[in-house]
Length: 368
Image (tube, rainbow, N blue to C red; front, side, top):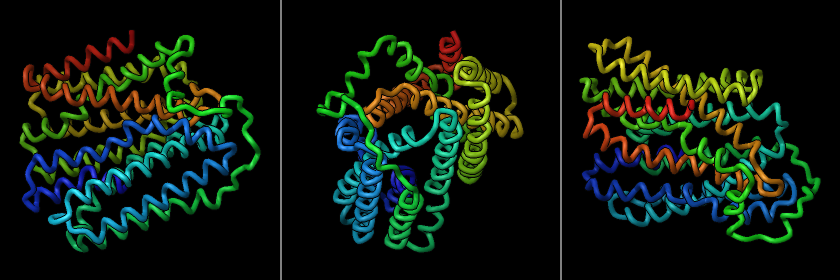
């Protein structure tokens, strides 16, 4: 929730306070720790010999995360902007550290058959957090102001520590030879595994058929004549809500059918989403068709997310669970970032129809 708030709501607040677009652009730097977290993931794996050790990393980094958020509450957005940006980067570094430990904790504590539903719950939490962080908190800010809102955010971070504190984490040692020494290059050895490059190609391409549509969805709706309020409801409530609702059925489907069968079905669904949006460009865009397209898009994105998380949990080396899972998820983020950046240029040059056709082509390549 704090991450969603800082990356989506703070730019809105800044624009309301007449900040330049250049300053707002700098705010995207706060996401860098989540891209580069694989550099310190090996250290977390090396220093964690059992579930309790991973839990200490979770509790310590989250508590520090909350402290930094509280410190930001005492600063003024207009006069202390650069200090706030620096503190946000520090806060997100703590949050990224927690994420590494949490992923390893989940991999080691969940049975293989539990991982699909576990990732369903994680994905549902992501979607609900995004909904609250990017929508509800903007309303709360309007009524209660900057400081009170950040105190509340810190409280939410601390509240998240309650279930992991109560969980009876095992102190049984994880016996792995790979824990004898640590190197920041440990993450690079992930790429030396036999047959791993086909898996990497899958990770890099899996979202490719829909991520460009997700990126350009709001501008597309603006160009269709929808108001900001309507777009907020359609995308922020209907879209994100659909994503949250579809995660549990996705997890149950993957658990029942298995990853291999899901691998053959989900790319087809993503291809159909791109085909539907391409077809929309040949219609008069009645609202019910737009709503259906957005529900279809977010449902496909939710199912793909659960699949990627579950698949990645199974492709980890013993003793390197946090490192290897982090590397895989970062790969999907990087490829999504590349597609997101280029999608605007493609839509500018070839119109939305050209973008959607391009997404269809990428979807077909993934199926092949």
